[in-house]
Length: 248
Ligand SMILES: C[S@@+](CC[C@H](N)C(=O)[O-])C[C@H]1O[C@@H](n2cnc3c(N)ncnc32)[C@H](O)[C@@H]1O
Image (cartoon, rainbow, N blue to C red; front, side, top):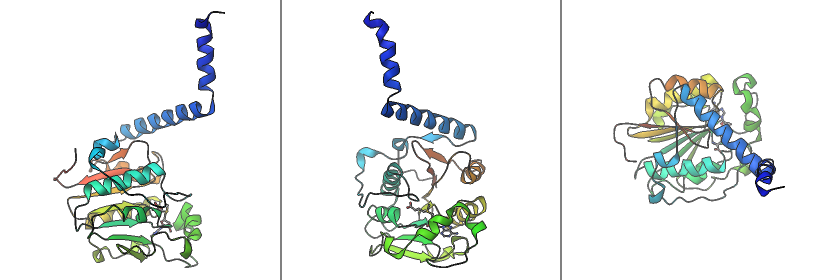
């Protein structure tokens, strides 16, 4: 048999091998995700459309994720956005601390005199409304005092409160990451509160944009008013607020 005839077989064998198959599936999923989101008003941006990676150095520590955390890529991109957009003295707010993995890393990338605020439900409080918590109940229950990675970080201030009942006038912030409740009403209230209180120029990041879930349905509505983008290769959406655009 000629080597020309063998080539398609070699290609097929290569395509069916584990790593190649996984890469193809992941590329196909990404393309589908981007196309679906774009149709509904949320285009996908590459990270280097949003920040200039050549001018950034980010610090990452305890770079280990578990179920409930963002992915490695997402953590890196969050830190890059924070590093690029937050100016000295501007503060950052996270809704949904979980084990503190993300806020701990973000706190290593904010300007020296900036504060990171993070809000989560009180630990150990029983009888939280299961219906209201939805799919987050396991994450809420799994948090433990010992797990909290941001303990001892001087530039982080933790609030234990239901974010939908939190008094946002207590905090001044120019960047926000919304990753607390994941049901439509909860994310909507968090988004409304953030948009009402965030300083301009500022930026908002949302996690868990899967294209079809309640977070996504809400963001498609906001996308009619705000130029929200999805960051390629992630489930994060990004919105820059204010006329002053400091990035490419
Ligand atoms: C997916 S985890 C957050 C992960 C974290 N941002 C990270 O990147 O590692 C969601 C967190 O939101 C918290 N949460 C859920 N509903 C909330 C609410 N109404 N107010 C405050 N926190 C809430 C849960 O307790 C849980 O710790």
